[in-house]
Length: 302
Image (cartoon, rainbow, N blue to C red; front, side, top):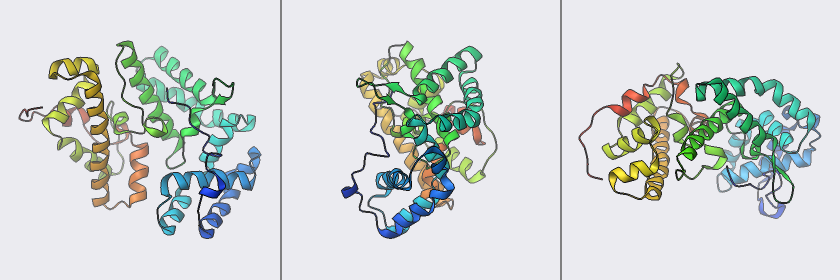
């Protein structure tokens, strides 16, 4: 479970924001389309919520890049998530109508078992609703959703990572450090079937997987396809499981970097590359993950 984050809507002090008037005006212009008013979120609170996202991801970016981020945010879903974290009853009703059925369906697909899928979905729903911290304040995992990709894609990524972590925990494994925004990592993309989408994305991911080294291939196949524990992998290659964990974390970040470069070469702008990688699920791509990773390559020395 992720450590309790500060509420993104209130964690950026006013004096530290430093956004220009053009960006602030652009944020204000999105208020009417966000549904914030129906959840009792004032224009001032709305400004604070969106400003926190811009500061988080584009504090040192140009004004043009900040404006692009503001314009491409899934503003309605971001505000819905924030209203849910504050316990707004209307927001929770909207969330349930829009996502409850798909949440269970995604969980069944990931777990490949109805009972396990329901348990997985129920566990995540509890964390989305909020778990009391030591001070008794309800802390929701929806605080991690930042509106840069679809909320449904984010939920699917979190469910996948939760399932992986649950499998590892049964083996008393040392889990990988969870990524910010609840497991937004290349790791969540590996298991599963495929479907058609933008061919440029499929080609970029397929090329990234095809070009991994023998060491990277061994780690990826062992961990994601064979579902071996880090301790077991470490025993085979003579490393401590914590060292393997760090290698896996470094590798997933490197795979994201390589994929991002290929997506840029394919014609996607930087912002769109980030969005695609944030919500990427190989099930939506025409990529034969198992075949790509299990192709034989000359063995290299670790």
